[in-house]
Image (cartoon, rainbow over all chains, first blue to last red; front, top):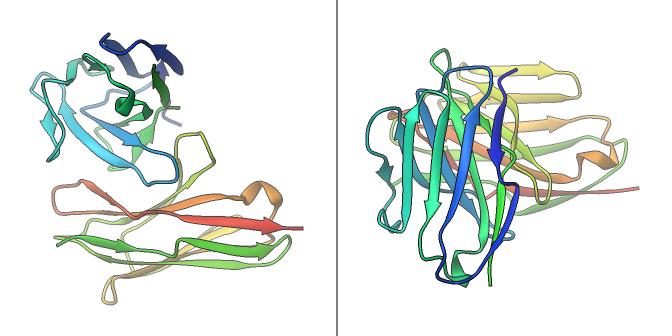
Length: 115
Length: 109
């Protein structure tokens, strides 16, 4: 099956610093990648949708200048949390959609803790 | 508006059968997904239904009625490892997944 990796799996950073999270589709080309955030005991919240080679589409309420998304190739998308604050601490999950079907393949997630 | 409803929590006994229901109202419809999510982990795909009827896959089955905007996930021969959250998601006209809040399933011995 399709495999999506995320790196790092866990990161702790200090308030005010920036953190980059990578999402890679390992054995397929992902035309579209999605970035989700999930707070404890809550459902997935879509942050943005990115298509390779174009600007990401952000959901309402998500600051595009704070959460920078780059989808430079068909196998890699990155999410950079800029000037992180403790309230940004969450579980960030990416998913990738291939060209053949509409299933989203999820990465294992990145747990971000901002101190 | 778009809305996905599923129960917040359910409890079942090991070895038994449980049915998790999901109703959806989305702008357009291109299929219904069920995902399983263990605590602290990302969701994993369970099933996809786009036509009416029952799809069986081992111990898990998923049912869809498009006219009723209704789906259910049926889990048979429950095992302790099935304790997880089960997420229902509808694929809307823009091929975007609209997620339910998830049903936490607790399995008791």
